[in-house]
Each structure stands twice: as structure tokens, then as C-alpha cells.
Image (cartoon, rainbow, N blue to C red; front, side):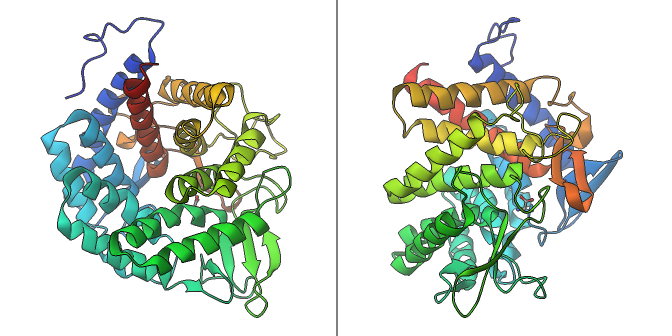
Length: 390
Ligand code: GLY
């Protein structure tokens, strides 16, 4: 069980340990609320909570793996056996996605759910799910283009669309390459990461959301946005996906070019003139309505988690800068401004995320992936504190 904040002696000027312990105690309460609501709804998983109503999805929606993953992080940090049972149950609801070949989200769906489940339980059956899912994802790679195709829709606009989010699916493939010994899966990841680096990124370290490739030449024919303010703007969550993706690919390959890319992205974000003082980005860094426009808490959570990892690959003041920023973001997210009162917010931990502003979808609401990456960031911060005694 999580130690109570009182037992830790948390005061007004809280230590990071106190912030983390309180956050997990709160996450445990909220997870029980949310899991309890969905437990009796066969095959359903939480997605958001809007206008006082639960909004769930079946496993087909791209976010299906995040609530199981949230439960695994809560279990890891509290040891609560009831949460463990829920983690297994909600993870099993995503299993059929191992056969998904019509979109690229298999990595999000399976690695956050089954990947964390395998890490924490060692259950062999989870390996089969991850390997099958990785093969399904790899089927979307076209050697002549050199990338994994993200979406199959909007063929009138895009010949072969690849979105920056797709960097997040590579961790599943890299795990499968290592686990199965099939080096072709690793080659797919490297090709995808290299071509994304070459064509998705602008000189300042920001990225486009969607790059569509000409199927004949393998070269970009269009660079656009789908969820950002404009084609040439910097959609906040996309920037965070890229930062996380290249940091992760550096860990998994040791290739310096991925580390340099992650540092370049971090420099763009940390010094951005439109980054708010509390480190929680607006939904797009170029929204003309700043500061009167919604934040995207999910972008802050993904970024904090990535920065903690990146700090481990940097030296001295640079490492300190990443950790200080991540700490600022975590303290902000843990504050009343973004963390819901226990029992409220539909059982989600964090408020104020934005899914797809231009589509009028999920604006200023809780989202499962904000909670998931927040708990991952807290877990990484906790490990860092115990390893370094900082
Ligand atoms: N991968 C979809 C999103 O970030 O909204």
C-alpha cells in the first residue's frame, strides 16, 4: 500500500518523495473508482469523461491499452492485490488487438498493457500476445518507402501517411526483435526512425504531425497537420511523442543520432516562448489564442516522462535542466489545478487534456493517456530518487 502523506511527514513545502507518494495514493483511489465502473461492462475500457458522462471504448480505439497500463503502474507502486486483479482483467480486454493490421496503434495498445504486465508478472502468455502484435504492426512496413504506415483512411489526400505519434510504436517492435532474435524487426524500427528524422523535422527541432509519402518514390508529397493549429504549427502532443520516441530509440539502439535528435527537440520545447511558466503546454505552441486557449496536460505528462529518461543520457547542467523541468511539470500536475479531487473527474487522475482541438473532440477533459504517462513519469522519478538519492 502507498504510504500516507501524513506518515511521510509531508508539509507545505513538500519534498518530491511526498509529492510522489501522495500522487500514488490518489491514483490508487481513482483507479478503484474507474475500474469499478467499467468492471461489469464486458470488453469496454475507459477513454474520457465529458459533461459528467463516462466515455468508454472497446479495444479498437487507439487508447485502449492505457487504462490497463495505468493499473499496472498503480499496482507496481502500491502492491494493492485488488488493483492487480483489475490490471489482469483490463489487459485481457485488449488481447484481440494482437491481430490488428489496419492501423499503427498496436504498439500503444499492447506495450502499455501487456508490456507492463509482462514486466511485472513475467507471465509467458503475455509474450505471445506481444510477439503476435509486433508481427501485425510490422506488416504495415513497406520496404520501398522505408516506414510503417500509420493510417489507411483519407486516401484522397494521403498516399502513405505517417504521423509523428508512430515513433511511440517502435518500442514494441524493438522488444520483439530482442525477444525473438528476428533482426528484421529492429531494421524496420531503424529505417522508420531515420526517415522520420529526415522528413518530419524542421531545422528548429519542431515537427510536422503528418507526412505522407509518395508510394512510387518513397519521398514526402505532403506535410500537414491533423490535430494541430496549422500545417506549419507545433502541435504540442506531437512534439512530446517525438521527444519520447527518440529518447527511447537511443536507449534501445545506442545510436548517437537519436540522442542528438532528442536533445534538439528538448531544446526547442524547454526554451519555447509559449511554454507556460508551470510547464504544462497549450494544445499547440502556435495557437493564436494563447493564453486563452486550453492546455494539453497529456503533452506535459509524456514530456516529463521522456525528460527524466533523457536526463540519464546527459551530463551535468544539461541533465539538471531536464530533471528540473520534469520536476516542475510533475509538481504542476500534482497540484489542485490539474489533479482532480478524489472521487471526482469520473475517476480519472488528471484534468485539462486536449485530444483533437480542430476536430472539436476531447477539449479540456481527462484522458487515459495523460494519467498513464503521468504515472510513468512518477515511477521514473521515484526510481531516479532512490538510485541517486537526489
Ligand atoms: N495518437 C493520437 C494522439 O496523440 O492524439
